[in-house]
Image 1: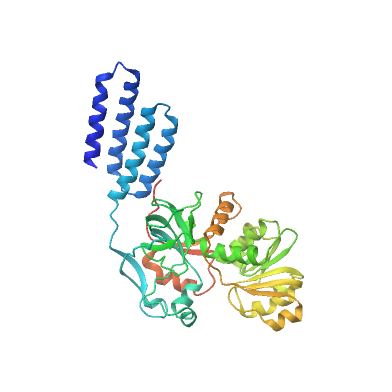
Image 2: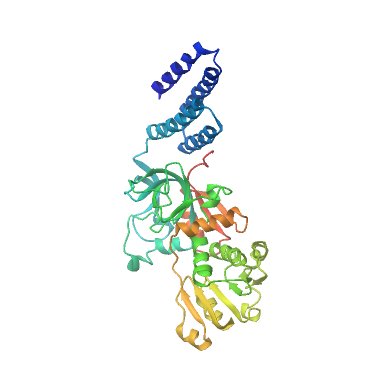
Length: 405
């Protein structure tokens, strides 16, 4: 970097001899500004800051009408990226929450792990925050090991928000410095660095912090895929959404209201206010009243609860309607009895759909509900809380400080 600075200083000093020339004066001023910016770079640590500064200079290059101004601004952009590449030395190891065996929260250990190298179609992300989901305790205790195979040591964390720090050779849509968020198919978010790809990761919403953003991917995509992809929800329809104050339920209420569907939602007494804030037309306190006494002939039921709640839901759906469950399988006998359809959803990462969700967030149509932010070292506590299935919105693990743009 010092040779670049010295070269710039010499370049600028050369312009001193031509002060009578207006173009040279302009060149001198720009050169001085350029040197000051280069010196600024030397004091910046965050790659995110560097790329942000480079983008600012790129816009300034358009403003400078003279060839000299454009050249200097463009040179600074190039130098910023070169500085980023040269200055950023990625660590070989990272702190992570690791499980070497299946079990409860007690098997989670805060320890050193190697930082993975992204493959040609992958990205390496410095994680700022990661969400906690009700499925995490189930994965941790090995419930899905037979179905999906044994993956130990295990790093949980299927929601991630962070900054791209390295890209594989075939990555074209994302670049170093991009602020991204993702639903990680194989987890890994409860760590300082994680691997993702372009099929999972989208540019994060500008209006949200990284911490709030980390609460979005899995829950919002699950609600989106249930209501939009499968349910085809539209205006004039009525949707019954169980667990409306939870991660999936809170997003489902808001997504169903986008096309102006009529929404009935259930939650406990303490969360009735939240249901209304999210846009539910009818809020049912399941501790005081059975939902089937209020909901009749609905077009769609979204069930993130299962068990008795699912069993009682078939009877409130109109003929030809649909029950979508994300925690169980629909009872074929009940579906035939009521002449309705059923679907069991296992959500999946989808960067394109995340981008659509981003648009809704930026438009103020949906927002995340974060009940608690904990440090990574409190992952066991977060996992225990998630296991209760009574979390208001989402719990988020903060892994690093918010980057300053």
